[in-house]
Length: 455
Image 1: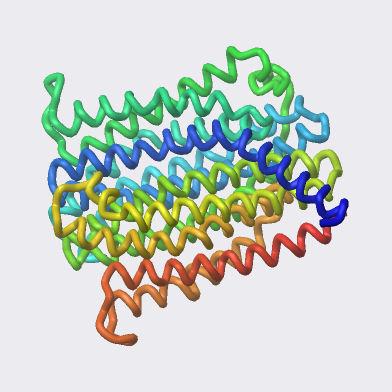
Image 2: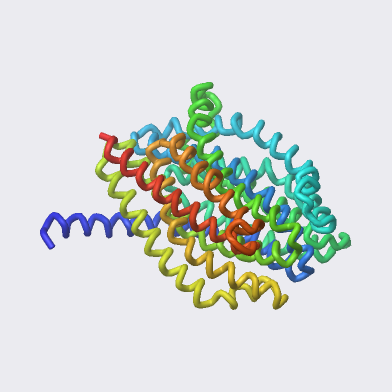
């Protein structure tokens, strides 16, 4: 190995360590946040398969709306990172504050959608018992939407500055709040009626408000955030601040909506096949979401460090960050996929005691292990592109991969005899492997082009 090659390898190792250091608290915060869905799934599954299916179907509507709002506000992270990297930290708070203007109408629309989701369930012929639980679950959790917007706005401001520890601690503190809330609302404690799966919605809304309140208090009270001038209303960032957020945030939000809506539609398409099919899909999806938090957290770190490098006009460093992040995500996917294959039955048994559900879920988990590679790569590439403030072309690529190719293929494999006997849930998970692989190839090629063009 030549000296330049050794030097490049050493730089990659150094950047990988920096990414892991930054990603560690982000991962903890993401896992804590994801624990809301995990706790809901496990505790609802202990009540009945119907309650689990109801939470799953409700979650299939909640998830895309939640991620769309998250994606729009995620634009704050690279914008803050570039301003901070350029030494303009005093502009970050006013910019983030404009996120309130962007988020408010989106929150109101989202609440209306969640509270009228019954029409979707009727159209998709969801089992009436499952639909009733799902509808009431969504009405309950909709009370937490304003808290979602506030929390993500403040969290993305903090993480754009490279300060990820506060959201980690708040996320950890929210876990016992959610567990306690689930126990009270699901089983009817403290004089409240037993709500079953619907209680998960009320517990999640309570936890979301707890997290938003803690994050707001953190930004207000901790001195290091004073340099952002978030609470200094005299420092304004006008319409251009909101429009800048929308120009970057809407494509990011739409890309996440496109990807997550695939999972939502899968749950709805499977619902006529019965609670067992939906429950096994939900188990696999929930586990997949937990594992996905690892590459997602590293990807958040990629966005931040690419943004800082671009702000400092260090374009070679931005390319190095991207490469190190993709290698790191791919290596982690190899480990998690192996563990999934080895312990699929044990994983399924965590969620349910029903042997039929476990048997179906194990087969889906094997497929999930295969899709972790392309999933980890595509999320890393998309994150690096966000650091470059490139979101519109990645959105088009995502639509092609998931909606033009993935979803039609999944529907034909799962519910028609076009390719032979219908495969049910397995057909959809096979199509997810195909769709994510195409997304990884397209986004990877886009990142290479954007990185080479940056000078």
